[in-house]
Amino acid sequence: DKHSRVPMQKKPDFIQSINKKSLSAVSGDQKCDAQKIKDAPKYSYPKDFVKGAFLDAKDTVNAWCLAEIIEVYDEEDRIKIHFEGWSGKHDEVMRRTSGRIAPFRMNSRGYTGQKQCPYRTFVFKEEELSEHQLEVDNLLEQSLLQRSAFDFNQFVRGKLFIYVDCLLTSIGSYSSLKEENLAQIEAFIESTVKFIAYYLEIFPQFVPAYHEAQTQPNLYLIDIK
Image (cartoon, rainbow, N blue to C red; front, top):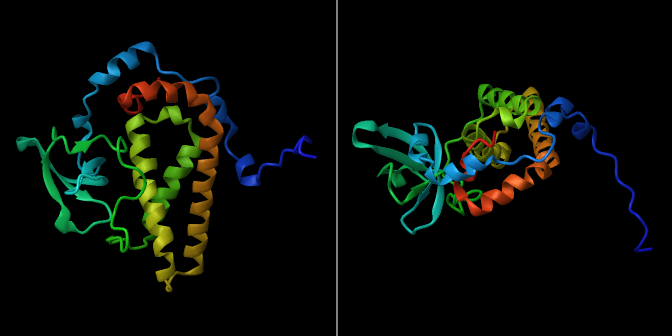
């Protein structure tokens, strides 16, 4: 019967294990206060252009790409950027105020590197995996509101996105991985999926802030509390 109620399925154990303290910390509708909305257009994002930070940058065919700042020349107010997924020959030096750069993820989406053969120098390292595992675990243990908008955006939509992409696309080429490495990778992927489930569970509480951001593009750069 098409009108019969579909029973709710039990949540998987890994979703049930999400830290309930974290969920309660963001209970209720999350909105930006009026002053923050008013100040959003005046947000000076060039101050976020520091070495190691991600940003959006236009390539030579005017496509917005994910890029990383690899050098900062303060005296000249310039930065050197590397386009993720492309070779170093495409690196460029630009002014911090250039119209070809913008806050991270304001215009770019997903992977923006070479389509056929991404140019990456990724090498699996246990230490790097452990660092990402710790970061993800901390995200699950803490309220997201304890993170600045800048730090959250840089890690989740930048560092974590790139690392998981590199890990999953390169794993088949590492025939020398030990069983313990595979177990560590499995645990990391599970933690990442758990974080995504946690994020999706609390997202409805941020819908008011999301709608506010539709009228003010800079709002996602600002802490809502």
